[in-house]
Structure formats: C-alpha cells, structure tokens
Length: 367
Image (tube, rainbow, N blue to C red; front, side, top):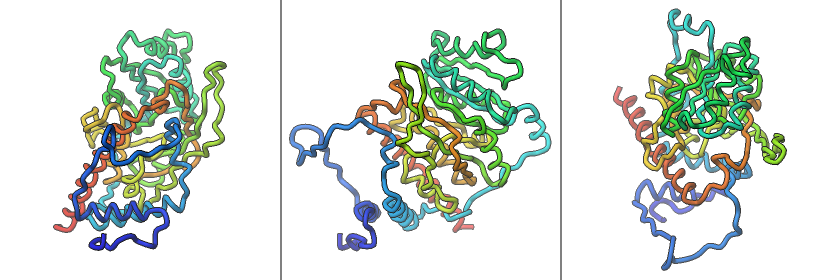
C-alpha cells in the first residue's frame, strides 16, 4: 500500500477502485475463492432479483469519480485514447452511394422463439418516418420456430402484407448464434446503415430519421447510439406501459472526448445502435461466441469497442427506442452463474481492447 501511495483522499466513492487499479499495475493478484466450505467469511444480504437497470440508481458524482480513476489508469498504462486520436472519416464513392437509392437503413432483427413479439418489432420498422428502410428478420431456430411463420404474414402473400410499407425479408438459420444472425443479416442488407432492434423491443417512429441526421452531421461518425425508455408488458392483458420508475436511459456517462475510454469501465453503450455497414464488414463483423465465456452475449459491446477506436460515436439523447420487459426476456431472472459468465466475457473483451489501444498508441510514437 505504501509503495503505490495508499488511498487517494481526493475520492469519496472511487477510493478502493482507484487503489485496486494502482496495485494491479505493479503486482499480481491472487484470488481466494469464497464458494463452499472453508470460506474465510460470509456475507449476508437480502435476497433480490437481478435488475440490469440497477446501475441507473448510482449517483452521478460517484460515476464521475469512477471515470476519473479509470481514465488515470488508462493514461498510466498506455491505453488511453486522446480526443480525436486515431479517428478516420467515412467516405463513399459516387458508385457506392448509388446503391442506396431505394434503401438507406437496414434494421436487422435476430430472433429465437418469439412469435408473440416479432409483429410489434416489424410494425415499428414499417412505421418509420424515414421510409427508405427495410426489416431483415433472422430466425435462428430453424423452420420449426413459429416465429418464421409470423414473419411471413408481413411478406407478399401474408395477411399483414402492405405493398406500400417498407419491405420485410426473412432468413432462417439452424444455429442459435446471435453474432451469426447479425452478420448474415448484414450480408443481405441493401442499406448504407445497420440499425439494431431486438425482437421484443420497438423503435419509435422517428428513430431512423434521428439516427441518420447525426450521421449526416459529421463524416467522422462511424456509429450512432440512441437513448431508450423501459416499458413493461402486462402478461395477462397484453398491454404495454411505460415504466416511469426508470428514467430515460441516455448513458450520459458517454462524452465526445472520453466516452470510448469510459466504455471500458461500464457494461453498455446504449440503444439503439446504428453503424455504417461497410465499417462493420471491414472490422470483420460481430463476434461469433469466439470470445472466452461468451454465449450469445456481448457481441454488440465488443463491436462498439472496436469501432470507437477508429471512428467517432454520435449520440441521440432523445428516447427513440422502447425496451420491453417481460418474463421471457434475456435480462429477466438471470442466475448468478450466468451473471458471472457474462461479466467474464466482457472482461475478456476489455482486455483485448486494452491491448489494441496500447498498440495504436505505440505505433503513433514510432512514427
């Protein structure tokens, strides 16, 4: 403790976090498992359901302190990305631009066994004020997945098909791999931009319009991330209601100067996410559960990390997306083992990002 200078008394909330980072820069930690018989101590706490939105209750001053400690650590270890460093412009030839005359944005929706939700998601795409959009639904449960038949209702010959509405296409896979679904949908996309939509969520009508306006504002922007509301499904009546206890999730811990550094500390960047399709392809697409511990988790977080190292991230601070909470959601009733595995997956993605960023900075110094 004396060797690293002890606690930094300028912190009120980040003192232990900062100390741990400084210790890890010089010394190797040893983890003593506290699982079964023989544990050194026990910790009793009231039982509580896992809530992925708990972090919203953390105070802003505490979050700013954590960001300051994390940023200082990145600077000491050579992984800090300075404002504007390593950023490129996104350019298109006239020939490339001509391909987007009919479709600007491709909304890719991976789905597995959700026939009761997919209609709402599709209809939210077809209600967009920006009409040059398409919905690409990638069902990863095979032809026996009833979601495929539900999607067919919105296609030519289906009872919900509307010739004047943005088109819907269907791809069916037999492999339950979200990264594969996303990459397959992007390979089939006709648009200039990819827009994320989970199968049980909805886009607000002006979502694509607002996302594209941010892209148009700066050619250095490679990705735009929006803000969202949390809604709850009444599973008896089917009604949806806005969850007013949770404020609009803006992820305002993201700043233009330091967002991509602070992203290494937090668990997500926000929704919906939109990106130039050509950049996703150039980066090799979404991960395919090839990151250790990743099981259909974190592939989007990893892409934001990689893309932000070379392109600016734009933001839409208005709510343009609705997250629907329900008993079948992937964030509902997660057991501790799954939480731990997911955390391990993102930690590995962070380690890879740290190494990439150190190499970027080292290459700059050699030039």
